Length: 117
Image 1 (cartoon, one colour):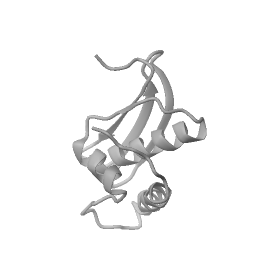
Image 2: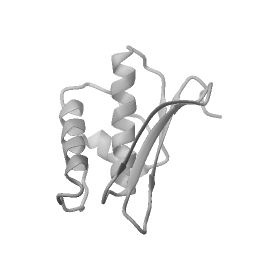
Image 3: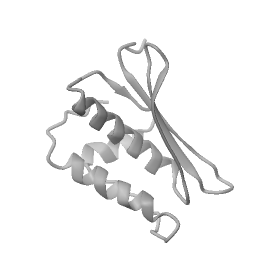
């Protein structure tokens, strides 16, 4: 059973349009803590990665160490390596996503976060 005092993240990607969004929910109350997007020409893995980093940054800001749950092994691996290993090419339509990826990787680098699976 998951710990109720936790943050759960997920992303959604529309295969027809390429639009992507992500969110984080506090499990105990089902309160949505953040919802970002839609972003154009993204991928589900990018959304999952950004959701995890967003959750970690939010918890860091609140000085909280509750667990963050994600169902994306790929995104968890990217967070552990502190680098999004996407094959997606940057375009004018998805430039905002690449700015967020850069910010996320920059934020992860100096942190001594312990990422457990």
